[in-house]
Image (cartoon, rainbow, N blue to C red; front, side):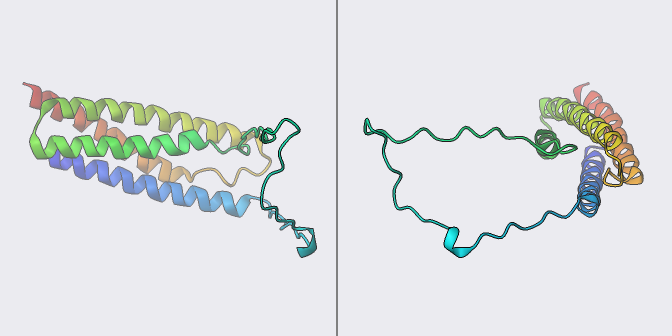
Length: 166
């Protein structure tokens, strides 16, 4: 049964990658074109060294505030796939060595991954409501397929972990 769950996790991962690619493609199609800035070659100045201040120290660096465009959530976009890969690795270790704590660790990572994924989906839908053109959101059929595969994986993961613990 553990191998079936592993295959199901991998199917959910494939559905997730397909979902990510389709959502990214829709977002790029819906985004307004960004005009390329043209800078004349004479305006580019190359400096070999930064001039020092009067007291001999380098000037303070710029303080850049990093922001993301509306509808983009870089932390969620990184954490969800990273946690999923970590969970699959833990489940693979359980399949290979049958060390029961790996099953429960993989289950905990799966639940955390699910929570991050649901918050990513909610944030994306919330941002899509605020935009006039909501065509860049994730395709609903792929979201449903990915969610169905993950739900089935959760149920079978729990059943397998319980049967391995007894």
